[in-house]
Image (cartoon, rainbow, N blue to C red; front, side, top):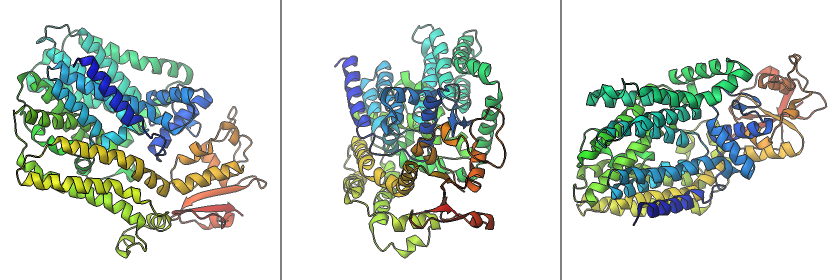
Amino acid sequence: MQKVQVHIIFTLISALLLMAGLNMVPLFDWDELNFAESAREMVLTKNYLYTQVGFEPFYEKPPLFIWLQSIGIHIGGVHTWVFKLPNVIAGIISVNLAYHIGSDSGKKMLGAFWAMTILLSLAPFIYWKSGIIDPVFNLFIFLSMYKWYQISQAGINQERAHIYYLMSGIFLGLAVLTKGPVAILILALVILTTTASRSKWHEIFNAKLLLFFIGFASVLACWIIPLIQANGQSFFSHFIDYQIVLFKGQIPYHNQPWFYHIIVLLVLCFPSAILAFPHLVANVAMDRNIDILHLFMRSLFWIVLIVFSLATTKIIHYSSLCWWPLTYFGAYQIYLIYTNRGKFPYWLNIPLFFVGITLILALWGIPLAATIRPVPTILLNNLDAYSKDILLNMPKWNWTTLIPASLFTFWFIPWIILSFFGRKPNPIYLYVLSGVVAITSYFTLLPAVANSTQGPVTNAIKIFRKKGMFIETWGYKTYALYFHSNLTPKDFEGMITENPLPPGEIYPKQEKRRLHAHNPNNHQKMYVITKNTFQPDESFYQKFKPFDNEKLSGFIIWQRK
């Protein structure tokens, strides 16, 4: 079969799997709703120079991903699937890129296996169907690194490396424009590590490096120059300040132990994270023409893992760039077995067993906790008041939420038993299993989780908005208020605040909106949503009372007295 035909097949398969049911899972608060709201406001205000939330500058992220979502809004309107479309496209490109790299190295079977592993590993599949930034961000970083790898191979292949320098810089610029300067740190460490290990310093210290910087600077200039001309430099100073705060871990609700990402990768990148073990600590490549590629992949994995383990601020998707080398080495392990160049390492059964049991417990435990009544006391005793209230008042989940757990349990246990007894079970089976479980979880489990955790608040916001009431949140952070209220700047015009607005400011900033929530126009109906863990002071009690007509699990609605 010709390469073009294989690309068409992979495109159709990945598009079918990734496009299916995008509207079934709503956007999750914070990140997905954060970016979706930024895109909605960008289109609404026609301000494409910088990101904003609540019609104020949002200094945490540059605008490229928001631009992509805004294009989707212009094409398809404000719908859930529109905000996930950039990642779907990134997923389709990634599947084809994996096959292309394998095929380009003369190993079409390896490329086909990698296309399968990058699509069907547990968490990567779900992330391709999400609305967060990281899948697109990771793709650009990997492309920049891959172009640098091609620089290292240009002499062997008797090619001119000029275009590779330029393209590596362009992709790095796109990565920075997607999420921020951490992309520079990651790529720089990968380049330094791989160059030092090979003693090929001439790849860095030569005139062609200027092309790298030209490509990088050209991409950023497309945004920076118009922004500075229109708004000055204040956005960048705030943006850099936030990146420093984020890396230092001064955001307490993101702090996790140092081993956090190790656990996350083992469980969420099943089975790739385990099959990749033998290749992460030593070069076991059986083909000399790809040993340098293995070096780049190992360097990328360890650098990302170490950098984000050292950073105090930790979120699940921060280590998601590791999925690229993990899925590659998982595919290479299968490739060795299928080409009779290696055997399945027997000792991998041990981590496979423990991670598999962890997934079984999680897949059964989550829906059963939402279904069993009365809720077991031992579970309630270990929950805070907010989580306990959501669990006690959530609607009983449908039996279909147990499908992922059933499939994983009754497919994985026979496989691991046969493997322990040396029956040489097919490792591809694990990817079929993880893919099926990811697909069924997306259609059954994730909608139930979303409906139980954020459905009541979302519905309340929409109802209050339809009634023309002013509603604000208090004591916790959410982007649902802006997105689901479909707010516009006009909604804040004419607000009565304790302090007058500055000249030229037509609506109050978020701090003054909260002042307005405490001191509204007496003729306006004012409501405030808080978590049930919120502890009001005497001043709050003097102005608000619980709204008795509405009960939200985990939350309280307060009405202006």
